[in-house]
Length: 377
Image 1 (tube, one colour):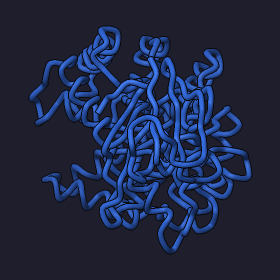
Image 2: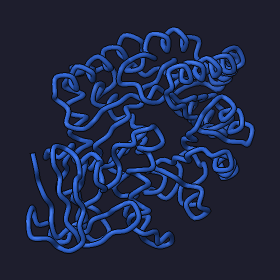
Image 3: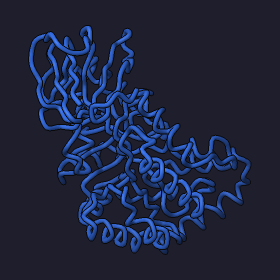
Image 4: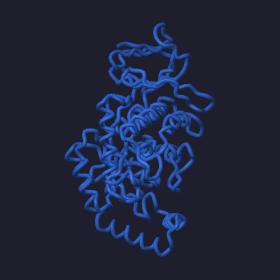
């Protein structure tokens, strides 16, 4: 199958220009300057690679649309796929938690298996148009992590493991007073909150170090990339690097991000952090890291729409990045971070995962999506 696009603002790896692109059998085969004479007229709209999302929690939301109300997991996967495509996400790393650290029903053992099986079935049956993979988020403090990980680690959709520790008083929750206040605001007494904190800290002391090493060994033995999550200090980064981590996901301080860069890690921040103007947890703003040249990629975390907005926001003040450099934050950079070298760039030989985007003021509107050269949205 062959298709062509003309009169587009083509975003390549190092520049953008009015040009045309030819696609054949799912791959980009030719990129030319000039408006061209054949193919769909983009009328000057942006033609950029499809978005690659390293970390999204959205699948769980479609499986459990309300607390304790579960949905057919195959149907949930199809709906999740369509929602992501509508905002330009063509490669999805569904971030699923192994090891309990909260009461989320979607994350218990039985529901997690149903969710993964539904996603896999939907993809195998050709129901999904984006390319879906799995990012296992490993809660290193959990008593049940090893049992869950040993069952799920060899799932064929797995492309990333990450190390997490949500113990209050450090990393994402380093503001202990705020975290304790949130617990009490949810109806917990001060005594109950203190008892829960003691239990969580005891679990961390018993499990975290050994579990981190176990996850690292699993990743290394399978030659799958490893990420570290919510690093706060030089020690956190050094420990992660020494275990083989190559991605620093959502560092919570500039100090940690700088150390990650020094150690050669890919620094990934949350898209909502940039678009909302800062971290909801009070951690380092993504904008601060961008201005310090300590930012390599964005992940959506909990708002898939944020990624295409990040690409265009980075071209505006105070950043003023070129569109090609900004687009790489949500396309080629995340793809390369997990070894997906066949996508994320408009160049001959790359997968034809492509977006048509038009600006409405400062708001990017996704007007067309193609995956492997087929119209998907």
